[in-house]
Image 1 (tube, rainbow, N blue to C red):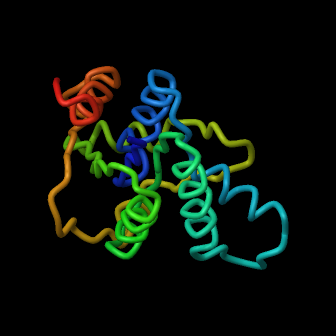
Image 2: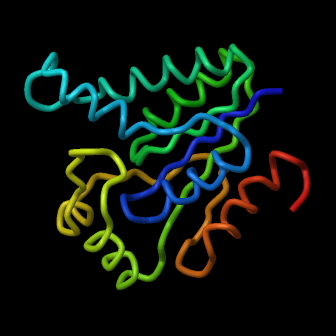
Length: 169
């Protein structure tokens, strides 16, 4: 059965690092920042791209799931509406769904990551710490896996996500 792994969490929490590791290990497709940046650079959407990147990502994910490809949805997913849309895309494609919230409980470490990281997506402007702490992020309202990256390596975090995929830790 194909798999849709939906990540959520604030920028700098470690989502992309874990998603990249999982993509390497499993061959799953991943990324949303690239989609959003491509939309910005196209100039088709003036100003804020709003939810255009997410909508494009849902469609691309569903297409790839129907083709039999596993997909990793790596985005903030700060609102239940986006988490629900990912879930709906997976259900429509007949995929198994794993929802994962990534947190970094060590505020100093989280801030250090945000202030020192480089973007993997050319010309993508990453959010500053102040914007991150002011961001609207809704609590999750259903069961999901929560991983604290302050106390685990990327490899350990990826193993925790893989466990429900394979039925073992």
